[in-house]
Length: 353
Image (cartoon, rainbow, N blue to C red; front, top):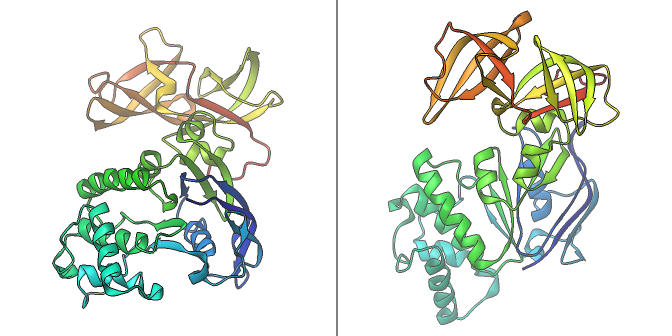
């Protein structure tokens, strides 16, 4: 197990800044997910750690050892690519053994190590199988075994589950989580799927336009977003423009959409604000102070999400029991006191992004 430290990493392609001043520390045995929309710099940052791309500025340290200018081979990072990069003309055992080519092991030792890592990924006895005869989930495990075979210091995963269908992805995600926990290897995962990041990661590093917006446990990013982008990207939110009307203990009261909403905000936030509201921030109530009309309902099992138009035309999403309302109903709403966050409107271009 190793620690990873990124200090002020920056990378440009031509005139475009893809990674900008990223600093991050990852502890031994920790799994950190690099989460963000397409083009946020996630995969480039992973490739900077691996040594597949040179950095323009900053440092990469593994166990305190500065590897910034060392080639990928000397960094001993195991990499699983999005499309696995398996060799179709080689058997499972040969694909896994390829990761050991530079160690020049005698045949018995190489075969023993291949068998060991295949057993780790629940593919014991698959050495002679053709990789083309395996399912997508099995191919993903072969790629994991190949990355683990040289006993890397750090495991790097680039969207490793994106090629699997939804049901297989969920099952394989559980297998991956168990494998990482069992081996205790320090792991960096790139994903654009929030559910995947929430399920697998100890901490999430949320990237936006090449910069770190916030780093923390999934619960922290959801409950205490540091920026409007974090609040808008993590989970589900609706946005309203409003104005601060009072302070009430730890909460700021915001007039917006025909009602007053208790919200979390910095103490110095006053005047016009951007209010981001999660579906659980509002409930249907016959005596609620906020009037609205149900536009549509999205069924999601035990819970449904209702799009409600408020006074002035703004829309918010409300989570409730599926039978709570029907499309076209005139409804009354009341804030629940949780799930609303406000930021000063000055300087926020385009809302929450």
